[in-house]
Length: 163
Image 1 (spheres, rainbow, N blue to C red):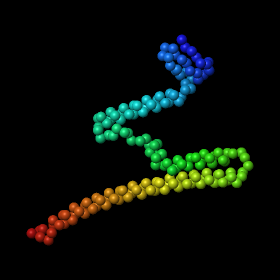
Image 2: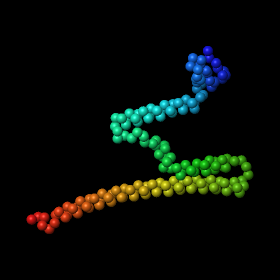
Image 3: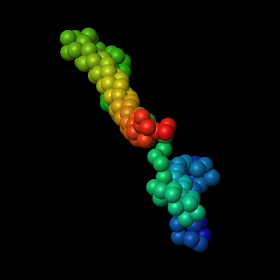
Image 4: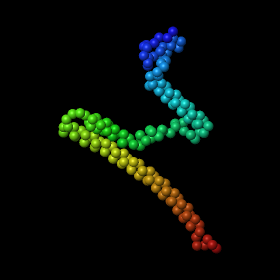
């Protein structure tokens, strides 16, 4: 026995055999379906990572982050400009008289966007500076090790080395 909540497309159908709600023929219940598919995707990804760790223990159990989240972490100051951009579009689409407050609001929105871009640029420059400093430190360490080896070789090759 099936009971329909309504005859329109997008209605839920209750199946008496399983006592659960199923999708109708139109498939309008996307959020629940997408949530189930996403959870299954995460479970499969975790299973693959565990199996990979079992075959090769050098692989960490925690997989590397997705490129989207890495980008968000690296450009988080730029994401701070989104509210300013949304407020700017709201102010520019308004159908009212232009007042001083309206002009100040638009100026503040534009300055928030410029500040977000400037902070993102400064964060990128700082990140590159730290990376270059780390590389230079490693290079200097290797050069000092090489000089130590050369000085030891030079000490062994003293004035009476050829006798």
